[in-house]
Length: 280
Image (cartoon, rainbow, N blue to C red; front, side, top):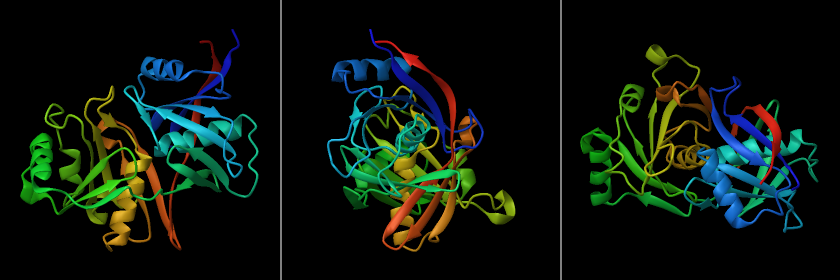
């Protein structure tokens, strides 16, 4: 039985255990789909990834991303954590940028000092949220519909629906009824007040994925990518800002957003917490 190189990376934090962990299996080409799915269920993390040889000649590596329930075409913190693990294991990109192949297509990743950042993938669904769906989401979050400033689809693969609230306190006070939110992926965002909250970040974000092993995601790259496309696109956020996420869970996630031309880059730090071998 040949062992596989395994790493567990904490993403979107400079401090170990304060970000969002992802399990990464390197050189995983010989694993079957069933083995990948079984291992992802066993780790019980929000995502587990498998790094494979690329099929596209433009890519540096191919990534498959599994939750405890299914496979995702794209996810943000697994993208950055897997890239961190691949580089740490000796991966050398073909060009200045790293190119990740996944089911959502080719994702560009760049090094920004100590951070890694990926380009936000295109939204597969955008626009306003249906009235009945918004009513259901509000019931599930325990809030009145009039407290929602705006609501939009910001789906880049996982199915995100996003709500903009007035202030950070409302976001942190949410106590979801996950039975009401079953089958939905909900993002909630609100601006920080410089006077009350400080200037370390400009927005507070929470992500709820009812039905998953961890129904609240600590720090979420795909959601923040979709939020940035919405908020910057409608003039609700500056072209460069920092989002805080995980506060309600005792984490200290920080997601850096920067628009450069037509691209929105989603970045953060990553820390290796576990290195070892996996035998399946």
